[in-house]
Length: 301
Image (cartoon, rainbow, N blue to C red; front, top):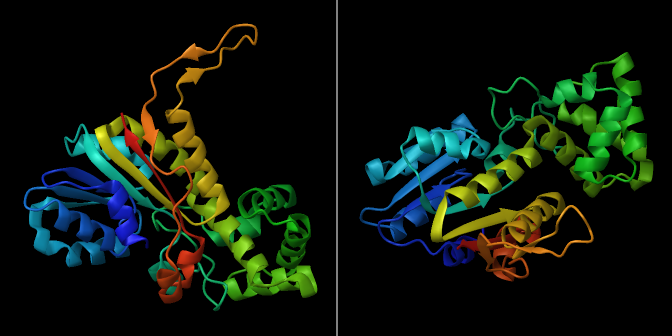
């Protein structure tokens, strides 16, 4: 997604050490390895063991220049320390669920087919979508749909789920989609289903909290002149990225007491994208999912 645009902002150089924080199919990592040849390295993180195995196979020609890490990007500092990497020259995040995960029947990410309610990107996690919809109380369930899905009918959908599970445990994505449609009636369209499924997926994978921590670590780990590039796909992610970059670029800090003047501080990054970069019409035509992509980038000072 946004391959050429992302590489232009990341600006990888030969011999550099870079992190692909969301390895997926390995497309971004392959391009980074090509541009950092002959001695540059790319360290690829992914919580999905299947994706990691497949990407590692594809990138095997790079030999020791590519290192696969089976971990969430929230463990960035710890995993790089384990690899004796103190500083990196850049890092790329391509957030959200991958096309492979959406298309894999056993993963339960899609409402377009009848799959087991799972939604775990990392199958080592205990919490899955079935537990969320079948065990969370009404208030918590509505809160998740409202907070992570920005669903205005969150209360109505949550009540419908609770009423249904009292008679029959929800076990598949098809059952959940049916309950959402029953709750919303004529107003239940694809967007409503997408918001509900997004909210549950974010809860299962702790996505937003992980992103916040990872961005803070990325700023600390990236050396001066290095770049941090993030591609997000919904407003909640984009807001976190925008706020994190704005905070790291501050030149003043407001004191606790309103009567005192702002304190000058050294900014940590320079914002490279005042407005987010979107996919080209040509890419959207080839990949409709790219329509919602927003890319932001900063340079470490």
